[in-house]
Length: 108
Image (tube, rainbow, N blue to C red; front, side, top):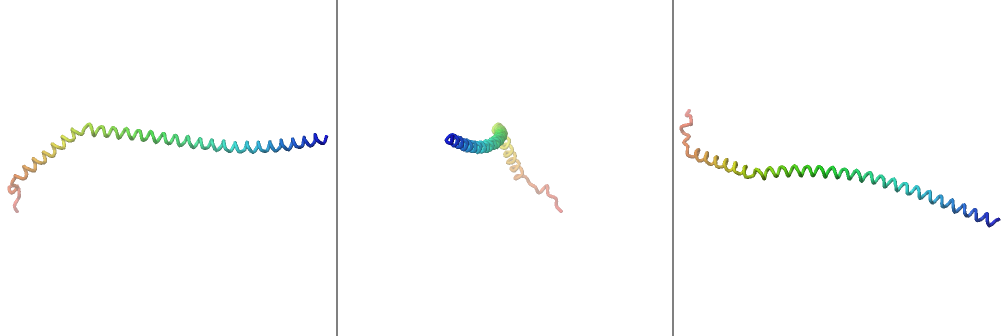
């Protein structure tokens, strides 16, 4: 009977130790789970921010592309207009350099 009593006490001690270890394990795993869920929320937020930034950059890229297309499309037209303007200024300079301004000046 003493052996049975001793075996029972050893069993109870082992069981209590096992329950304590399992309880600590549950607490540790619960903490790890909570941390992992927090990291998940943070990561999802970062992902949403990155996607928003990517969308904004894509829109900006489209605007720049549209602006560049306009410049390329109208380059020849703008260059022709600028050449005509320069030629008109040369003609005006030639006309004014040959004019006599003495007749236009008022004498006091």
